[in-house]
Length: 176
Image 1 (cartoon, rainbow, N blue to C red):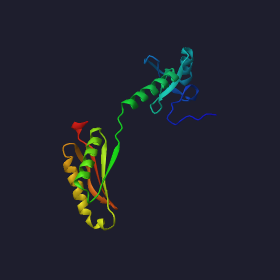
Image 2 (cartoon, rainbow, N blue to C red):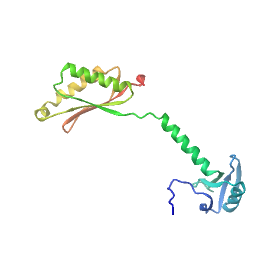
Image 3 (cartoon, one colour):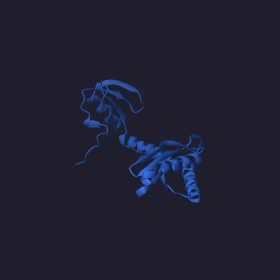
Image 4 (cartoon, one colour):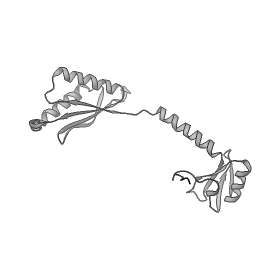
């Protein structure tokens, strides 16, 4: 026994409506008729009867080769997935007492991520007594954002969340 997914349309004998609006395989409207008559038309052509709009009054069915339709639909979806660009979020960790050389290295890393179109999550983890100086962490974040000013926009301003200060940045529209 097989199970049909909820979003799969009703086919052939599954259509139990008294009256249906029929569309031919060429897209021509054939009018309103009983489901049996529509099924006989589909059988005569050697193709399937597929309910494409069950919520309509009366429901709309189309005479088509369902397996060919599913194949073409999966090809279109595959092609759309190829064209789709996934945006990743890359994380860069700073510290409160980061030196200028390390800071510049992290800046260059962020520039590289942003140029590829990825979002950047900048974080500073506060340990022990550093919690009392969360304002220094926010200052470091703002300095980082200022350095990336022409390449990135701040999505979420620096904010203390638990023991971390987080900021999110994304590439400016002109970079894409």
